[in-house]
Each structure stands twice: as C-alpha cells, then as structure tokens.
Length: 209
Image 1 (cartoon, rainbow, N blue to C red):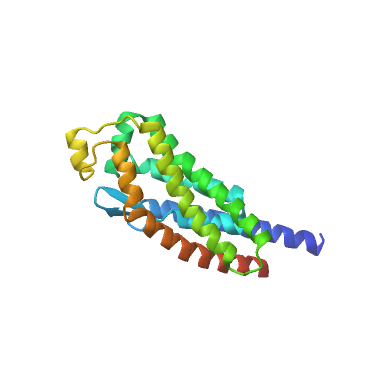
Image 2 (cartoon, rainbow, N blue to C red):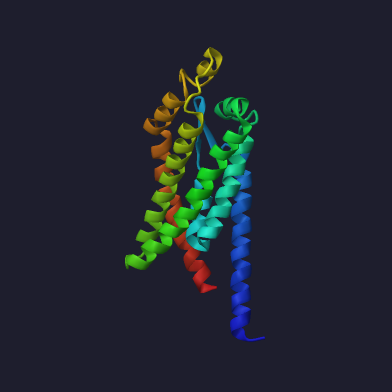
C-alpha cells in the first residue's frame, strides 16, 4: 500500500472522528444549559457553533448533516423542554418538525458553500472563517424565523400560551420579538468568535495531519 493511500485513509479517518465528535457535542449540548440558554420564555441556542465548525473544516455535506442533528435536537426540545416548542407541537407536529430541521440543514450546507467561495476569492487568512461563521448564524436565524412565519403565520395564542411566552399574542409578534430581541445578536457574536477561532484552529491541525 502506497504512502499516498495511507495518508488519504488517515485523513478520512480523522475527518470521520471529527464529525463524530461534533455530533456528540451537539447531543451533549442539547440536554445541558450550554446548548439552550433560557432567556425568559424563549431560548438562546449556541448549537450552531459546532455546525459552523463542521461546515468550515469538513465541507458543506458535513455542515448539512450536523445541521440535521441540530434540527433533531431542537425538535426533541419541543417535547416538554421548551414552552414555545410545546405550543408549536400542539398545533402541528409535522410543521414543527419542518421548522426545526429544514432551516438548520440549509444553514449548515450554505455555511460550507460560503466558506469555500470566500476561500477562493480572498487571500486574507482568517477572513473566510469569520465570514462563514457570521453567515452561518445569520442563516440559522433568518431561515428559522422565515419558516416559522410561513408555516404558522395564522396562529394566535390562547391567553395561557401568551402568558407563557411573555405576552406575545401570535406568531408574527413572536417572530418580530425574536428578530428584534437580544437572542439573535448574542448568537451572531458567539458564533462569529468561536466558529472562526475553533474552525481555523482545527483546519490548521487537519492540514498538518
């Protein structure tokens, strides 16, 4: 067996190990405060960070897969772990599944594509990681809110549900509240810092291997 074949096999194994570790990290974050930080009735999620890391180090396909894992974890949260998710589940399980999963798959996949495109265009080391990380967080927020508004736009909450969500009367006010609140900006900053820093570090390590 040639050295080239051995090197290719080793690189493949390392990539599979990284993908497995990132998947495990998402699973752990799902059931700890690290993954879903409670801010009143809604949650601030940092699980997009490992999705971004996978997308920039392993490519768009890995980003989409990790996005799928993220989406599945978000859907699981809807069963008694999230007040907002529980309300959506009570309205439509299928629509809730779509809202939880599809935006995260798209966000992971597009983050990988953006990273590849920026890497080809820029010579500034690190800019590609920062741009991809910012886009990954933005995609997650935009797609999630977009699908939420599209599929649940006519939903009006009962007085009890409204009270549980801090006074939001319908999906539209909820979407606006999330978009204008502190959730999205905090997620964007955290993803930009951690996604770019860790992603770049892992990429350098993988190249050395």
